Amino acid sequence: PFSTKLTMSEAARLQRSLAKAHEEEEWSRMVDILKELAATEVTVATLEELKIGTVVAKHRKHFRKEVADAAKALVKQWKQLAAAAGVEATKGGGAKGEEPVDPLLGKKKKKTTKARDDDDGGGDDEGPPQPP
Image 1 (cartoon, rainbow, N blue to C red):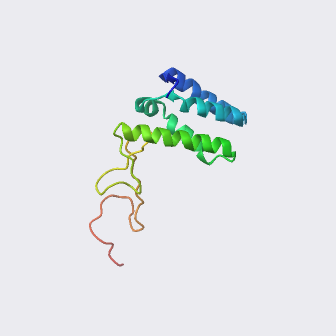
Image 2: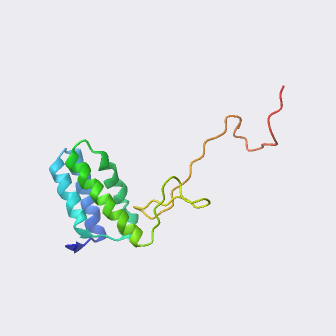
Image 3: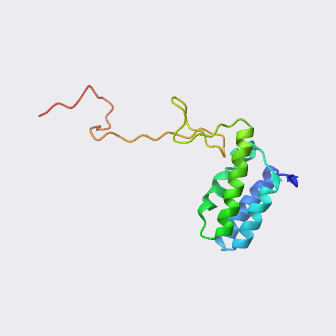
């Protein structure tokens, strides 16, 4: 039930239009663009290349309910597309030993680690610190 297949250039144009509508506070235009994106067939490769999923996802908590609802619906649609394409969505950091996968982009997320309090950052740890 898609009206057209979304080309890379058309996706980029819509992404720019969405950003411009947001800057100009044209909320109904944002909704129209999100609905236009939802009505087109998009590939995981396009989502990955343009990172348009992250742009749309930022609007899921928009203060205008109609914008937030349209963004949520589109993100859900794209997550289903990614799952159907074999991109595994994970919650809470993924299965043991696996890196989490961003379901919108199909790329592995980078894990972040906090430095330990007793780590001086020198990298020459030879055991626990000795008392003075």
